[in-house]
Every structure is written in structure tokens, then in C-alpha cells.
Image (tube, rainbow, N blue to C red; front, side, top):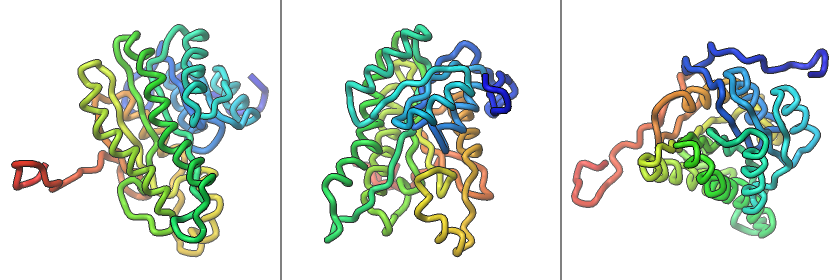
Length: 267
């Protein structure tokens, strides 16, 4: 470890009340913000961590802090996700936990400002990254007898976002994936959940900081998101989408009164 730098010494007294000693975790988008905070939290709980990101300098720094490994990974590339899982298995013998966290803003709308390359990039990272990451890690989790996948969605996956409707679209898709894959994978002892933070400390909110400050909107500390991920990982729920907002206790969002076939009262 480098002297003077924050490190993640194992500590079993973590949110969720359970140790992750002996568990192996992959964190995509782990070089900064929510990924960095969660990689540190997982390591403090006892997990061995592989940090994945396109930011090699930041990713290696976090990997050093958690006494883990770094792997460059473009999550929008299916083969890169497969290589990340293979790398983790080679280093640690398996995978138990995957935080599919990498994300970007869209940078365009659907009108005159529409930009196909920006659209493809946002969908590739925010949605394909979760689908490809899930596809790649499932065999490794099955080989361990089960495991946990947590996808970083957003409050934008639970609410309308007129300022960035395409971001809302891919985050809503991640929410739908979590709700659907939770029960689908449960028979294999694989749990799938999502976290849905509001404006949280990360590079994604950099263009919005002045506006948030002027509006008096508080920014959620990255640690609050990391603590929620730990609660999910050490819990027993599946198919849940946990909202995280300032001054509120994080909890699974309750999807009420959704009409169902032959169920007049909804599901």
C-alpha cells in the first residue's frame, strides 16, 4: 500500500451485519464516485475486489487501495465483459458478487440535438453494460452455487426526467431487468437487485453541480450508495430496486397497483 493513501482494512462490522470474508467481487465503473466507494466498502467487509474501468489511472489507484486487481474494461463490449470475468476467476478462483455500476449521461435528446453516436454510447454503457455483464458473470456465479448481482440504475429509472429522457429510458430498462431477473434467477440461488440513487456524488453530476447548488438540492454522498449496496449484498432480497434520497432511509421501491391480467386490483 502507498503511505498516506486511504486503504480498506477488512472490518466485519459493516452495514448488513454480515462479513464478506472469502467472497470475490467485481465492480465496474470502479475508478471513481459510486464504484470507488463501493469497492472500498466491499473490501472493508472482507471481499476480494477486482476494479474494472476505462480510467486506468483511477482504477489502478482504487485497486491498490483495496489490495485487489484492476482490469481495463469497456462494458459496452460483450467480449470485454467475458474477459473481465475470466480475469477475476484466474486471480481469485471464482466470482460471488458483481456490481454493474459503469454509467454515462446521454448528452443529447430525441429532437434536433439527437446524436446517434452519443445515443449508442449511452445505451451501450448504461444498458448493454448491465446485460452483457450479467450474461458474462452468470456462469461464474452458478459455478459457486449462486451469488449476487447489483446494477446501478437511478432515480431516473423510477421517475420522469425531462432534462435527459434517453438516460431515463435506459435506467428504466435496468429497473425492469432487475424486477424481472430477480425471480427468474432465484431458483439458481442468484439474486439480482438494483440501486436507484438520486443526485449522488459522481462525475455524472459534474455538469449539474451549479444548478443543484442554486436550487439547494443536496448531493447524496457516495458512501450512502455504497452502504446500500452492502445491505443488498448481505441481505436476502431479489428483484428489488432500492431508492436512495437525501434525508430518507434507503429501501426497496414499492411498485403499487400495476394492472395485471385477470387481477383487477393490480399486482
